[in-house]
Amino acid sequence: MQSWQQHLAESVEEILFDEETLAKRVKELAKEITADYQQLNISELVIIGILRGSVLFMSDLIRHIDLPVTIDFMAVSSYTKGTRSSGTVRILKDINESIQDKHVMIVEDIVDTGLTLQCLRELLCARQPKSLRICTLLDKPLRRRVEVPVDYVGFQIEDKFVIGYGLDYNDHYRQLPYIGVLKPEIYA
Ligand code: 5GP
Image (cartoon, rainbow, N blue to C red; front, side, top):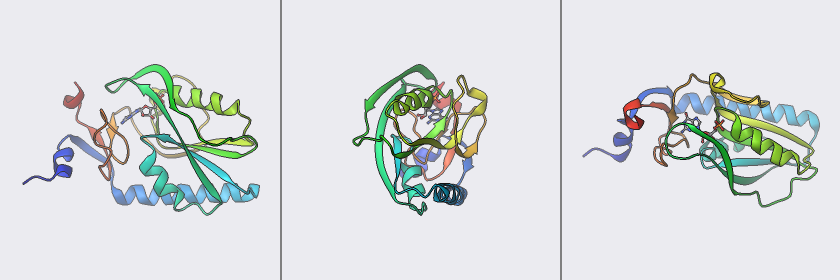
């Protein structure tokens, strides 16, 4: 009988980054982040994961960051159903702790139009963190509609809708251990 993972894999047109490639790049990013913040001699780095897509990336990333890290989460909704941005960002869940005077890094799964991060950045900057950086696993520069400073990028990708390693299509496929391109006929 076909396993559920095999069933999900049938919707994948192409694997962009397999488990090994993801693990290697995530470790590299964590090393870079560690080295950068070590220079600032910080006592705490608050990592804010944007639910739900960044959860797998964030949990792998923080395991390799050699700094005093605390974590918090925000949930935003920028997409209705389907694969294109609705252009509006709703805050569904806010962080639990104050970030005033703290070094903060947002961890996102993917930057597409940039609208989500622009909104989040403005919102969090207003709370006066000591510093605010952004780390994203994936970046689709060709789709950008607003400029957002992104400090750490795992991979740049073309304008294709991707799933897996936390990224969903209609809430499925997050459990795929790799990142793949969703077959267009699935969302056509
Ligand atoms: P933006 O506001 O930058 O347009 O969109 C950011 C959000 O859109 C991401 O956090 C993610 O939830 C969603 N998104 C954008 N592109 C993709 C994609 O290729 N695959 C998936 N699964 N989500 C995407």
